[in-house]
Structures are given as C-alpha cells and as structure tokens.
Length: 294
Image (cartoon, rainbow, N blue to C red; front, side):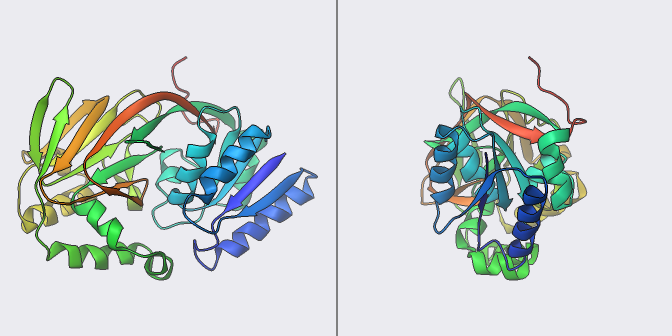
C-alpha cells in the first residue's frame, strides 16, 4: 500500500500535481489512498498511522513543511518517504537531488534507492533539513500561507524587508563543553542547502551525525543585509563576522523573546536545544545520490 499525503493550501496548482500522482499510481495498478491535511500536525498523525499499518511508502505532495511533518511521523519506521515537491523553497528536493517532474519523482519508488538518514530534534520536535533562530525565524513567524502561495519567494523578501526595520534581539549559543557565543542570527543545517537553492553550509552532510552551525556574529541591520547578500553569492563563510562550526548539538536562548523555525515552519520562541538523534528516516532518492556509510 502507498499512502499519498498532500497539503491543499500548498497553492492552487497542487491539485494538478495530485491528479498526476493519482493517474501515475492508477495506471500502474498500485494500491494507494489519498489523505488531505486540514491543520498543522495532521501529516504527523497520518504518517504515523501509515507506518503502524505497514504502508510500503508515503508519498508527500506539498512543501518542505508538509514533508517535515510526514518525516516526523515516519521516523524510526520501515515505511519509506517519497517526495513530490510543490512548495516555495523546496530545500528537501534540492538536498536529495530529486527530479523536477511528478512522474520522475514517482519513478524513484521502483528505479531509485532507499537510504536512511538521522533525524534531528529541536526540543521535542523532529526535523530533517535545517532550523534557525533570530532574523530568519522571525520572518518565517510573520509570514502566512496565503502570502507564500501567492508570491512564492517574493513573500520572504517582503516579510524580510519589514523585519529588517525592527530591532533584533541578541542570541546566545551554547556549544558542547559550555562554550558560549553571542550572535545576531543562527542557521543550524543538516545538509548544504537553504531556500532558493542557496548553499548555506558547503560542508553539510545530510547523512552525517552533526550540524553545520552558521552564525552571524556582528550586530546591526546592515550586517544582516550583507550576510544575506554574501549567502546569495556563496561568500558568507569567508567573512570574519560569520562563525561556521560543526557540532552534534546546540542550545540557543535570548534575553528577550525571539523565534525559532524548523524546516521552514515556525516552531515557537526560544530557548531551544538542537540535537542530532539516532532515529532513522528512510528516504527514496535517485541511485546517483551518495549512500551514507554503513
């Protein structure tokens, strides 16, 4: 059995992609059922039920947020996760080198391979790709789904411009060994990619056992603007104002309320402890994708 979980608010064209998924699976005589989410957290529960019922795979049709919830529900199970991306950033699709068309993504169920990657945690919330606190997370908190669906990446630019005019709280990062670092914003990446196909962590390894921590140390609005520009140009890691550190865990707090996001969805206010867990997620990827070490 293949379960298809989709997010109906992922944009008007998601229905077209869903129909192509239905046509593909029906045309090959594969047993499947389609489940529609109605609220945040639904995909976690649906995926967990799929795993308990012994589904071979769950196909996610939506954005990184829906994918992340399904991954949370499937974590530690034998059920595979396959992804048909339809979102704003599509970091998951780029990180795992997924093809662009619906049919090619579904072909991977039979022609691809399945790898196991470790899940990460932000407090009690499991996630796959990345998290952040500070400026980036504040932008995510203030954005609504309607803006993302209508404007795409432009919605991030507009919300970012508004957030740019607000004062930014100081963050405190605590690494293992009680090393503490003061920063303005921080991105905690499992892999290499960020939204819009930006390579935020060149040394990131989604199949590894650590995070890549990228922190902007310098304060002020123009420091944020330069950091964003440098990241778009792939030059941010060379800046003396940017800390890049590999770590299996990180604790982030702030003196005044500040936001945290995971996989592009608002998580809640700081403080948050980030860890890489031993819980595995089985992901369907192209055969060319590097396999994790045994």
